[in-house]
Structure formats: structure tokens, C-alpha cells
Image 1 (cartoon, rainbow, N blue to C red):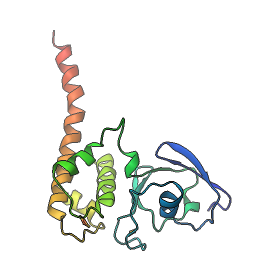
Image 2 (image 1 turned 30 degrees about the vertical axis):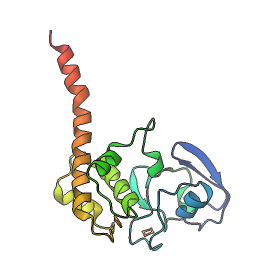
Image 3 (image 1 turned 180 degrees about the vertical axis):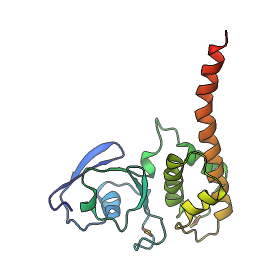
Image 4 (image 1 turned 60 degrees about the vertical axis):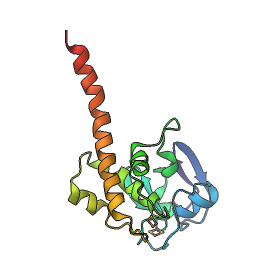
Amino acid sequence: MARGPVTLTINGEKQTFAVAPETPLLFILRNDCALNGPKFGCGLGECGACSVLVDDRCVRACTIKISALDGRTVTTLEGLASDSEPHPVQRAFTEMQAAQCGYCLNGMIIATVALLRKNPAPGEAEIRAALRGHLCRCGTHMEILAAVRRARDLLVAERQLPRQEQERSAIP
Ligand code: FES
Ligand code: FES
């Protein structure tokens, strides 16, 4: 584990932190980087509210120490959108109105992005398994599951569109 300064790429920007090696990533993100997408819920790795992507994996930022992340790439909720367009997963959650208080949504969205990067066409059992460790105290589970299915379908359609256009332009 790194003992000196730690360098991470956070939402595309390389940053160096000289902090105690056991500092949780969540504290760095919220206190030093003003990235408040990841939420502090249990602080024990049990609720999922603090989730971020480390490389492409969904990781709990409240329990992972900064010293374990030297040279890694971290993406938070704020880093998902491109050109101020929401990520398709964010779009799906909005379309399906999958929120009440919204506290769990950071983790739900990050877990969904990680799932769809690993498995672009997950079935119901795979979706439920990916979200199993993410708690929603408002009981919005059915809308959240619907949003994940919608995100999957949006991403499948986005991938198919360029292929269909290529096929169409190839027709003499
Ligand atoms: S705040 Fe990190 S898992 Fe609950
Ligand atoms: S919408 Fe409130 S915790 Fe999930």
C-alpha cells in the first residue's frame, strides 16, 4: 500500500493527495474534490450509497483506503455524463421516475453502469444480483429495477443504431 502521496485520475483529471494512507476515498471525494454524488450512508460498506467506479468496478468509497488506489481511475456520478448530456443510465432513472428521497440513487446508478459495462444484456436474475447489496429505505425497488431494464434497452438501441446505419449505407 502506498505510504507517500497518492495519485488518482478522478473523472478524467489526474490529482495527487498527501493524506493519511487510511483515509477513506469517500472523504477525499466529498471533502477535497467537492464531489457529493457519492453519499455517506452507513460508513461500513453495507448500504452502497457511497459507490463509485474504480476502473470499471463498483466499489464502496467509504471503506476503501486511499492508499489502495494509487494510479487507479475513479469515476463518480458526476463523471458519467458527457458534453452535459446525462448518461443513458441516468436518463433511464429519470424516465422511469425511479426515486423517492434519492439517497440510494448514486449507488444504484453506479452499480447499473458497472453491470452494463460487464454484461450489456443482463437478464432479470443478473440485474437483481448486481443491485442486491444496495439498500433503498424508501422501497423504490420496483421502479429501480424498471429503470435498469430501460437503461439496458437504451444502450442496446444505441449500439444497434450505428450498425443499422452502416448496413443501410452499404445497400446499393
Ligand atoms: S456509506 Fe458506504 S456502503 Fe454505506
Ligand atoms: S429512493 Fe430513498 S433510499 Fe432509495
